[in-house]
Structures are given as C-alpha cells and as structure tokens.
Image (cartoon, rainbow, N blue to C red; front, side, top):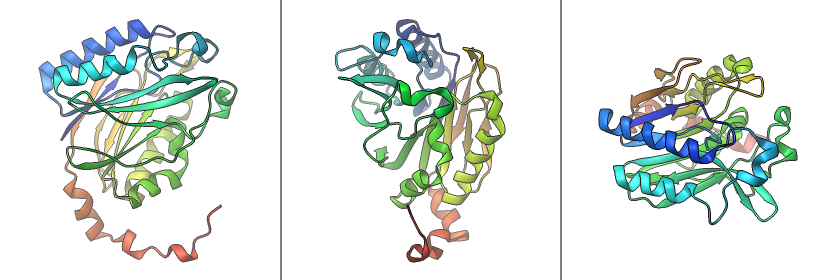
Length: 264
C-alpha cells in the first residue's frame, strides 16, 4: 500500500480556502504518484484558531465531510482526513475522519487528550469513546491525534486489538521536535506496528510547527521523513505482512505478563 502524507501549511480560520488547497494537492498527488491512501494533518480546515471555532467549525450540515467523500470517490483513494473541529450542540470535538475509496465515512475518532499548553480544555471537549480499529483494504488500522502520542497505553491498546499501522495526525510544535521524532520511533518499536504521521508546517500565533511527517516500519526503520519547514508530500510503501515477521523475530506480545501490570 502506497501512503502519501500531505505535509502542508494551513490558512488560519478559512475552511473554504483550505478545502480548495487540499483539493489541488490531492489531484496533483494522484496524477503523479497514484497512492492508495492520502493522509491530512490535524485541524487542517481551521488551524488552531480556537476562539473562532464556534463560528467556523464543522457540524452535521456543513461541507467538509461531503467534500472529503467526493474527493475520495472521485480519485478512488482512501483518505485519512486529518482532523477537523466538529461541533455537536455545546461540545466542540477535535475529530479525525476516515473515508474509504468509495467515499464512505467508515470511522471517526475524537481526540482523547487535550493539550493544556494550548488551553485546549477551554475550547474543546475530550473524546468520550476509546480509539478503535478500522479496516481499509483488509488492513487493520488505528488513528490518534497529536498530543495522544504521549500516552503509550493508547497505541498499545490498538496494537493488542490487531492494528498493523497507526496514523498520527498532528500540529506538533517545532519547540518539541525531538519529542515528536523519538516518541514515534518508540511507539513503532514497542508495538511492532507501522507509524504513519502527518504534521503541519508553517507558523501561527507565534508557534512554529515541526513538520517532519514520518513513516516508520515495525522494526523502527524510518522509511520516509519530511523536512521541518517545507510543504511536501511524504510518501512510503508499507507492507503489513512485515508486522508478523517482526513479531516472530522479537515476540514481545507473547512475552507479556499483564497480570503483573498495574493500571490506573
């Protein structure tokens, strides 16, 4: 499966302009490289314009989900549709969207862990359901959002449910670039899964973002890595059968003794 992550800058507070930008980027990538799956970054319709979200966020009757569905079916490509601000009554969720190549919304995930450093809890509601497995082309996949990466239990639970790859959609800041890199490597190695991330670039509200979208295989090899500050497509070919090969070499899941682990 060829996976392309669209490492892009985001136009703050302008969903229509960002949809048009994504439409053009997807068209170019499909015409040039014909990937099976395309990944978008976190909050790609609005950026982190948190005080404005009540006026510009998506909701049940807004345009972004139909836009992604049409894009996926038009190009016959699966979309990990990044995440968007999605309002339900008084709650504002940071919601990741999974659209298959027939244009069907097959799964959504609401970010569980809200970032205190960005004052997210003042504007957003944390997810109310655990992350779950979804399938595309028979592959078992998972998704988390940005700050979720710091919580190893989350990806471990997905791996235990059979995930072969986990996507990370993000707006991770440049100030913590090393954390971004090494946490991804750790999650891939400890869970023996592919990690596929899509981070934004650019600057907003005096925050520079880290870029460096990555694809890491279950052995911890970096298959592709974006630059820190350039818009680009980060592309890699993943082979899910490698998950089982790695788990046979180092059978950590067979060696687990969870009855001796304490969870809180």
